[in-house]
Length: 435
Ligand code: SF4
Ligand code: SF4
Image (tube, rainbow, N blue to C red; front, side):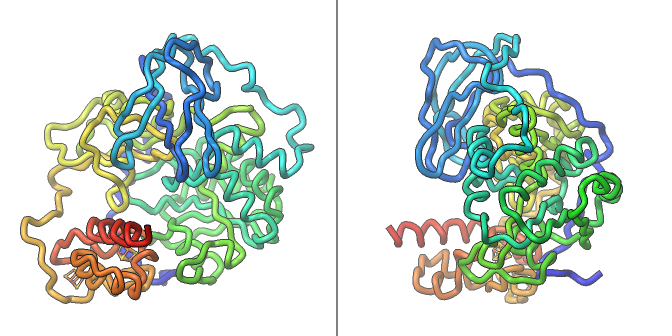
């Protein structure tokens, strides 16, 4: 079937490793390390001190500006506030909580008695206070996205594409809790008042599509759109083009073309915040890959270490090559598996040596394949060259900042150039230049 957006690639899905295994809840961790930066924006400041007792769901960090709070994923005692590795790279201060295994709920964590009577301002405030961020990996504060989309959205799109290979967390969520996701969409639609609401997923999720088709009978006004599978269809700009035919301009945002896109897990979190009074303290994670023994999806409390999550699926194989937070196209390699799960951690993908496509001698053979597959219409080979040279003018002229780091060019490159790493370095150069 014809692709509905420019470029893109069709990598092997590997989704069958985990998609058929029923969702299970992971045992609670003995200690949770709650990162104070789990969103795009300013980090939280701690609201608790060492020695404090905390309840499950208690707000333990918050801040001003572009910031959403973090909450205790277990009840217990605060034993430290220390730097921990961050799944996105680098380190970040974290609040360490020794679990008392009582799950004593915070008194503020209670459902709203008449959710249907809440105003849009109250709904946005609940979303913020629940600490909801884009849970497909973007981690942008959901309250801010909701506010900026008000009166500027004619089309609300639920992004259930999950186009990254290996990851099946949204697929499992949609099959297990379709009503939670659609009620979350309903709440967002109350805030944004769009004329059209589209539930978009790819045609490699036939079971989820069938479940949604049945469930949508209870949600008149929402339409299901099953798209031909192609990576990176789940990227906002590509999904908007696939669903509406509109192109977000260079440097622009979805609202510039009347669209707002929410991820499926984010919509479910909105539902839980409004209908159950539940902040983001857990999420579904796909733990998978040929480098792990028993791939599956787990419901995991935030702050649990990757090491414990991997142990819960039988541990790593002897042949493991790389552990990623996220998928193989856009994920971040992890050097320290004590790294805690964050709100936007949708997958832990453990690749084996058979997936090692790196080359000791990368070289550009000027084949032009990277130009054909770039969904943003960029020129990756030149961006890579000028990133290496630190040529700020050329990088601006070639729109490096439009690069969504999807990895299509690197995937297609026969010369095995580490293109995306080069672009990240180039973006750092541009940002430093701007300062
Ligand atoms: S990583 Fe950037 S340059 Fe490469 S294909 Fe994706 S958007 Fe284009
Ligand atoms: S795909 Fe790789 S080898 Fe081909 S032109 Fe682009 S960078 Fe060079």
